[in-house]
Length: 160
Image 1 (cartoon, helix red, strand yellow):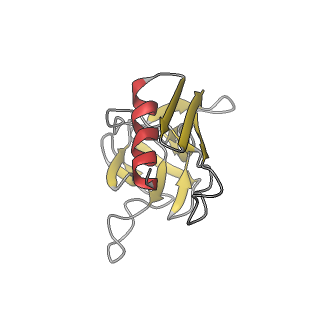
Image 2 (cartoon, one colour):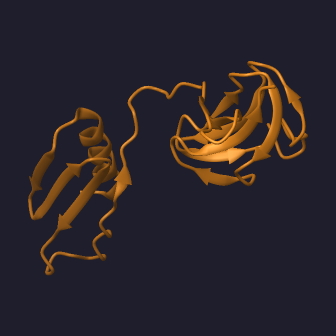
């Protein structure tokens, strides 16, 4: 069984929602168990037949079958009236549309509702993150080209 076939099997299991799959093909045995947000792969092959080292077990996060929404979550902070714009997806945060273009927004900029603040790249798709409120950017919480998690704060906006 090729590594590519195993990776495709992992993706299929993650999307199908089953908890465990066990596959035997000749001397190769593959067991894939899912638990929460992690998919685990265990591959065993007999030592006598092994021509190349077996691939290391791979843990990959499951991804939604449908694209994530482009609208970020906006949450009011508890200590004041500032709004926090959070990442709606896991990916790589970019402050500009391409390396030779200027940043979408800077600290102190006046922004309007629906204005693009950044892009988050996920699986080679660039998702524009738009502001849900008008106001002034108080703080940018993530460095350019940094990985971001789901629901991670990206911007702090003063809506007044």
